[in-house]
Length: 377
Image (tube, rainbow, N blue to C red):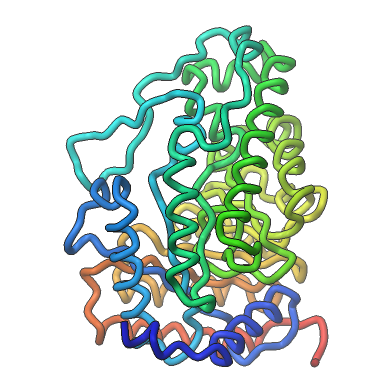
């Protein structure tokens, strides 16, 4: 644990200040860079999801390695991750595993086949399903790791994601039109469950500022901007549906944790509506692969008022990541701050990670010189 043992609070604070300023469109020496390391060299994803002890061991090893490799930018974060299905399990659904030990768990059945069934749902106990596992290990991580190691929240998806797990696949989309009142009832209940989970997550780690954000994002968000809502399904429906069925329930969550980001891997038919939540959001978290075609639209929608985090999370090579970030910088400057989040794996060698960092840093320095910052301070 040499990297964690030698962690310097002043250095981590300097890196956080760069993120704060970039989110505010205040001048920085370079656009912040983000990294997270998934390590399946010893344990499969299934083994990690099922064991808090294993997750702790893997997190410590990954954080320690990245702290030693990066001279700047890296803000360490540990993640408790049992899969995408925490809220589904709170409603009694069982995790379904495929034959691939590195495939995340899903749900086998969608119990709601008639929207009238939603009126029989009750808010589950706060520690039911996987939440008891999540809270236990969040507490343990918070106690064992230095305070300069942040923790991510739990990957809860969003209210519409909960609908995806509980509703029959056809009903998930037809009910927007056939049973809107019942759908609103369901989403209101799902948002309330999610709010209670986030409240318990914050309590488990002791302080909202110990979290990168309230949900899964490993990139550190500034104080007062810890909100995070996921809505991958909005890639598949209209802006009108987003306004009616997504945004009101995202807003319900954001009333408790204002600011922050919305996540949708992409594409983005509702892009122009993302920042205009109540309270307003500060940015988008997305996948570069599924968003790159919409860079011109992002430049218009986010101009001077929102950051965009582009995840390189589809096994891109060193060359593809550097070329991708250069495309982002060339497309969005001088109007929009685009921040890369690189998901590394254990297959990356130390020398390749260092080469990647310096290649991205060269772009990030040039990019920062081109941005129209709000002030010179």
